[in-house]
Amino acid sequence: MNYYAVLLRIEALGDEKLRVSLELVPRNADELSAELRLVKNRFPSINTINLPDLARFELRSWEAAGLSKASYGASIPHIRAMDFKADEPFALIDVLDRHAITEVLVVTGDAPGDGRLPAGGATCTGLIAKLKREHPQLKVYAAIDPYRDSMRGEYEYVRRKIDAGADGFFTQPFFDSRLMELYADMLEGTDIFWGVAPVVTDKSRGYWEKRNRVVFPNHFEPTLAWNLDFSRQAIEFARQRKGHIYFMPIKVDLTAYLEGVFNEVTV
Image (cartoon, rainbow, N blue to C red):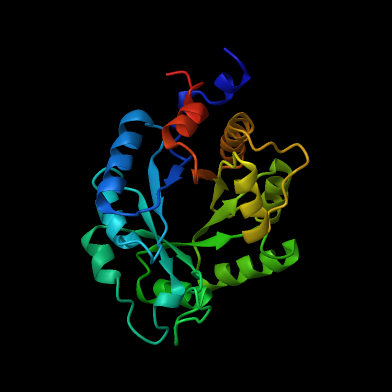
């Protein structure tokens, strides 16, 4: 048995304290249902599904979470704060209650193509505070983006989210274990899902650098092999830090990537 097989024993992945989440983009109900069946049947170590909310698709995140709940009790929709009025009742609470959805991830949301934000839309911290005040039964996650600002700036933003009532965080994907260590030390004791996303082409790397301001480490390679190796390291990092892990497989074959991540687990 090699090094990673030892690190990724099924007992470790099955530890009830380690949650392994997969982010699935809900383009439509049929495609999402097929992906959920695939993941449920092939990759039992995944025990949580998180679902972004992209307005350009017909299926919204909370509807997708309703579908996902049939396979995964832990289904976490992303909620775009800008889509909700700060001074009005939270319109989705009946939907969440009907599907027994108890966890949400609040994000600011991307501005429309014209760059104009919806009038009266809530801020991220404002919606977090509103949800925790009016619906305390919800577990509310927020986002950490290590590349959006300076480390000090991001830390201060994270603290404002904690002060607003955030119960935990999902990070934007990391590509450097050294940066993960810095954030883990800075936010010790915080409930964190550490994000990992495979980047397997030069074009994809350019997108992450331009759009998300990612600084890749010198040893990074846009290959499946490099990304699989880093993904396994990230699982062990999350386990040792008593956190959680989530995968964001964009523009990569879902089955090939997940098989590569989990294929050395001893069943």
